[in-house]
Image (cartoon, rainbow, N blue to C red; front, side, top):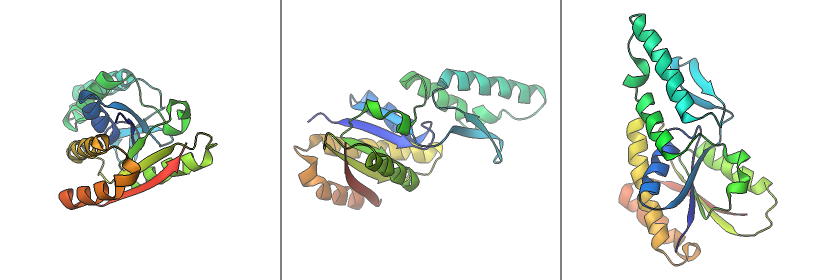
Length: 201
């Protein structure tokens, strides 16, 4: 059964893009999104993130941060963005798609069969958005939250687990009948608690 998948995190940079990249490589029909107001990347300090609008190409962010990095180096500071993995991440992202997309602004991309989120707050925002739409198709959509910390190591683990979960769903004839078993088996196998909900388009 060929399902359509959406991977969603806050900024459509790290967790959703790691999963998108993996699933795309494995031949899945997959898209990815963020639910935040803006795209935020680490900056010179926690209080000064680099902020971009959704739709800003990853290539633009890459060039912008590389330029800032060269300026830091010329002032005798550390290479911040290369060291913290931001530049390699952006390079990966721009090989997957052009720019981060915001879930709430891309309703026309649906309907999806499965939406996988990586943070409970994002899970709630996706469900809220689906409930607020005109549910005219009455086509079910499975929304699952796999909680993943927003760092490169955890995103790599989360991406692999997202792939395993999607392979399980892809292998079933009818996920609506088997979803409880799939979730229970996954939780036992990976010792991760999943949240899930069925909404409609």
